[in-house]
Length: 448
Image 1: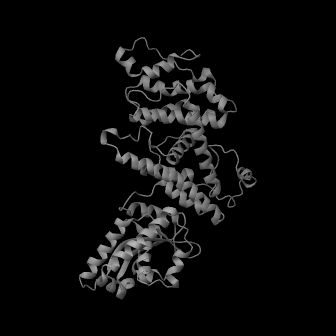
Image 2: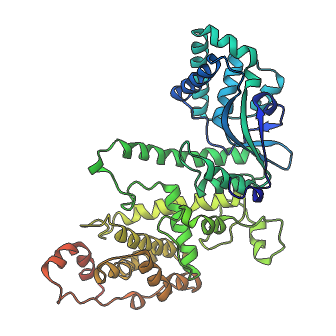
Image 3: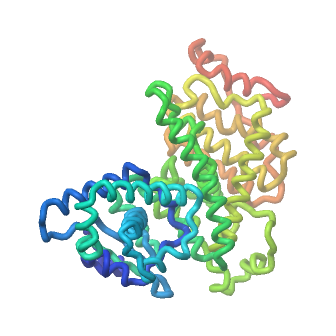
């Protein structure tokens, strides 16, 4: 394993029995218990095959990653699904003593997790009842024969980075998942953290339903990521906020997908904030005296814990309101080729401008400026054969529009947003390709 020393780790092989001697906990910010019948049966069959070989060898069930927190509890970062399933097997085998029960007694599984636990318990019981010899062998040495590679770390962020690099069984943990765990640990009390989890998971589930729908489509019907129809609100919110915050400081955005590994360090740095009581900075005084809810600002300092979640939920709501408003407008966001990567980059820039104006000023200002903001953005499409992300960065940084919106008390004027575009020398093919965009440039009260 590459440079494990930096994780302040302890790496050892231990049995399931010895693992249960540790003060284990499953943090409530972990994902739900999602194993289904197929996962459970596969595990049981693997165990049965090993036990039937009449070998004294141990059954090693992969790697666990544990985070030792300030209370000296060992939070299960990677391995929750396997550990919960082994607990269910122990329960069926009547091996659950007070020590084992303690690990699971305080966990509040969501509705999906509870359903899976009940269904999997029944599946395990049925499987073992039908395989008495296997059940008998499990009873003899189940706790001692099962073992794991266990990595113990004392730094939560690095624990999740290690999990991300080691996990090959499913989707890697995203930067958004890491931020969720990071800020939940800074919440002041469990009830508030639980409320946040439920709200956050509701947003995640809406994306999962869209993802499943996407996978059922035929290949030629699939919605492209660049087309943005299949973007979930949570990812979209982070994407827009990240770009506005970076561009407002005249900093380049590294990649279109800001939650990608390419952007990971910068993305996490942007949204990992300040512990409110750890620094005596004057600019934090307003946060210390505030009562929720209040009007956030996109470029505000990120405060760890509850304030961070209120910030994200606030802007998810603002984005939804803005999108609903803009559906009424005669703006060409869909046209021939609008799903191409470059066209999606332009749309991201346009949406960032709209949200910044909406947030900084008011709805009336958006009403007044939206067409000119569109022209300011989509002139790139009319003037360039190819659009790269560097094209977008250069446009935003060189023109300093987001910086000006962020720093000046008054919105940009129509004159500042006006662009010149001469269509007279363009051929008919060109005009036809971009007729919807050109119509916006030629219409309205303002002369292009």
